[in-house]
Length: 156
Image (spheres, rainbow, N blue to C red):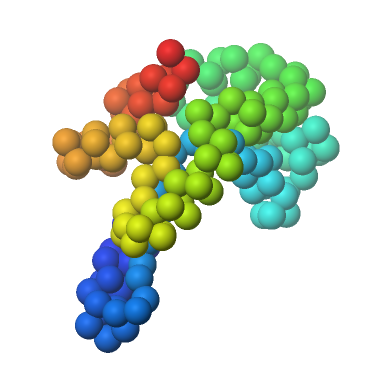
């Protein structure tokens, strides 16, 4: 909310004090980029296939603390299986996205040119926005069932 709130404040300020400038807030859905692969590297972590035993141990612990049936699956995976699964997860995020990076760039640039302040990128972003607006009190509920269906519709 901080970026969106700050941007909304800037919109009004710029309309009065600098009408030649505009602000756009980009709210992307699942975009086919390498962010899932590269974010760990930016934070100084090893690439999934190069993770040490200690890194795998920490990752396994984090994964087992997540709600849902995955804890038992993760508990029974070897270190190499966890490394491979994390590697494949990053590749799948990039390669199976409903919106390509090129499509996202076009939507964003078109929105900026049209001086739209809210730029939703991807059908999943539009669905999420609609659900948040319909049930704002549920947004921070730890039960993500409603949110997961947003992304499942992309794969249907």
